[in-house]
Image: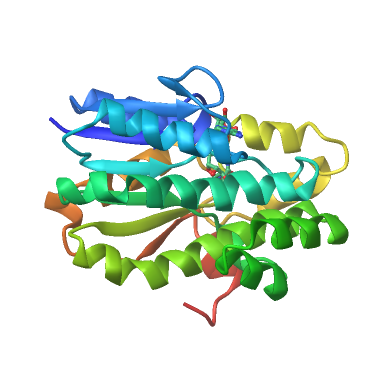
Length: 255
Ligand SMILES: NC(=O)c1ccc[n+]([C@@H]2O[C@H](COP(=O)([O-])OP(=O)(O)OC[C@H]3O[C@@H](n4cnc5c(N)ncnc54)[C@H](O)[C@@H]3O)[C@@H](O)[C@H]2O)c1
């Protein structure tokens, strides 16, 4: 079967993706800050480089797919750390392994969020898309709002993907994303047990049209579907919302 690499496979959504790929008979190279084949802190340049070099050494003949899943929630301080891991870290490793995925004409599935459309600062998004990590980080810490760092990073990631998908396709790579809604993982457990966010989050969960929060398995199923060339061979540049209908409810006049 196939050889896949991913970041953030230690817990939550990433771990469910890893388990699903393994259950299909694939091999999975995991990069994470803990419990992984390659230990790397993706908030740093050195960590991103170690991740790319480690994956290249483990997959010299190329990859069937890559999933940059590592991420932190809006509660992490300072807000710049959220952008460093969720946007700059995800992008650096994706670009770093692009040639490995091209070798096997594989697929990349990024992990966005339905938070991407719920609020961001355009100036910060522009700095992110310009690759200005120092500038985006300084601005985010000046604003001091983790939610803007989280939503903004996921929005920037989605915009980057839309723009990059043509060039990736020309290299034989299908580049897509899933945009999960509220999903029960250690990341959201941290928010739910924080008195500052708990009440708002419970109301938010109650408003999900499907009537329940997402499970890591829900996101893994959609990710593995997008990775599969038999099932999703004509899908490229797409951001698939897997959120129980929340995005449609909140933005009924946009698509
Ligand atoms: N849970 C949700 O409701 C939700 C919704 C939308 C998007 N997401 C996204 O899904 C992805 C996975 O989140 P999750 O909810 O499973 O959370 P999680 O905390 O269970 O998993 C995050 C993973 O990233 C790793 N990680 C964190 N910081 C890192 C760093 N500096 N370097 C390397 N690895 C690091 C963690 O060790 C962990 O394995 C994230 O990108 C998150 O933004 C989650």
